[in-house]
Every structure is written in C-alpha cells, then in structure tokens.
Length: 122
Image (cartoon, rainbow, N blue to C red; front, side, top):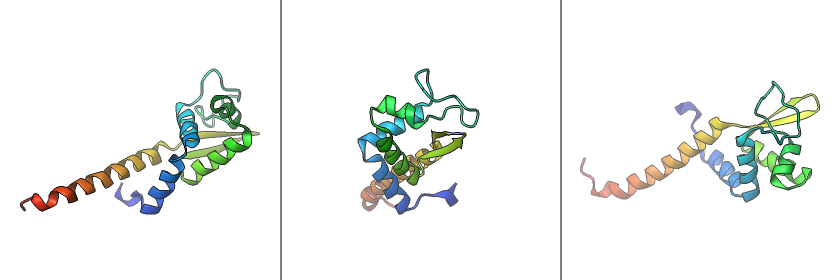
C-alpha cells in the first residue's frame, strides 16, 4: 500500500545491492529456490530456502564472499535469513523486489509525465 512506499534511501540501498553482478547472481539463485543439487537438508521452516553451501556450489565463490554478499542483500531487505538448527536458510523477499520494481517504474512515469506536461492542456 501507499503507507509502505519506498523512500529514496531504500531505492539507493537496493540499487547499490543490485549493482554488483555477483550479488545479482546470488539473488537469482536464491529466487530460484531449492533444487536436487542443494547440499543442505530441506527444512519445513522455509521449504524453498537455500544455504551458503548451496550458493557456494552454484555461484563458485567461497563461504566468506557469499556471506558478505548475502549480508549486503539482507541489509537492503532483498533476502530473509531463517535459522533452523545449525543451518541458515535464505529466501527472497519478493514483496520488496516487487515494491522496488514498482518504485523504479514510478520514477520513470514521473519523468515521462514531466517531459510531456508542457504540451498538455488542462
């Protein structure tokens, strides 16, 4: 709703998080959810959640780099982390991704409206 509208700080934080190709790749893998190649056990806490070890195999980076990029994505509220036993599961906050896409589209609409406004008759 309108009360949850993203402010400019939110937009900048998310744009920064998405500006790194590695983070974008990690976000895509997390968004894709689990598959048969995941090394972590499936957990009812978040059936589609993936762990760092799953991402290491799919992204080709070590644990510390994956964790760093996940922290950036978490700080931008693009992914959620759920702990279950010794496993941390990551899932995409699709609500935030959708809000970001809508906010960016709105910026584009506002810019377009400003460009054509002088020629409009009220």
